[in-house]
Amino acid sequence: MYDNNNIFAKIVRKEIPCDKIHEDDRVLFFKDINPKAKIHVLGIPKANVINFDDFIDKCSPEDVVHFFKSVSKVIDNLDIRESGYRIISNTGENGNQEVPHFHIHILGGQKI
Ligand code: 5GP
Figure 1: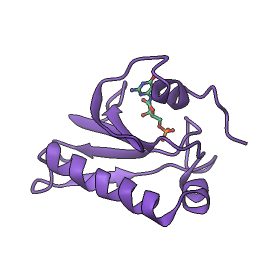
Figure 2: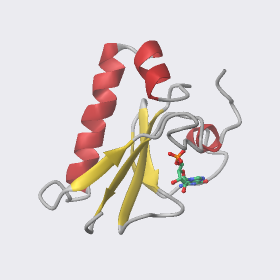
Figure 3: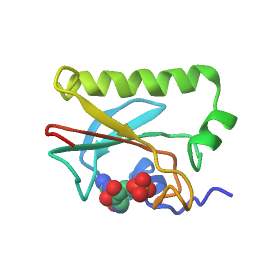
């Protein structure tokens, strides 16, 4: 079950601040508080979904496409398309997922 009090739910509700990169009514992108690379941005849908599987199961195809097109737009905004980047989504216990709200890590700005 989705935990309404997870840290990213609080960020979506503006209860705690974030260093925002891009936002619209369905998605939010912000800098990771503990960056693992020169550029480390997190991207989340605003829907209450726990992980990748939950996102694909519960969100509409339009919302899924919108999310991934937004990831691509942010990659352009960060100017890392040419230099390269890594996108990751950790899921569940073996994936070492820490925050139970689906998110994509975008890492770049250096050799990962
Ligand atoms: P996960 O391990 O769940 O894939 O990644 C969670 C990420 O969220 C970690 O990289 C961690 O640094 C980041 N994070 C945790 N709490 C906060 C926070 O309050 N603000 C921001 N911006 N990032 C956070």
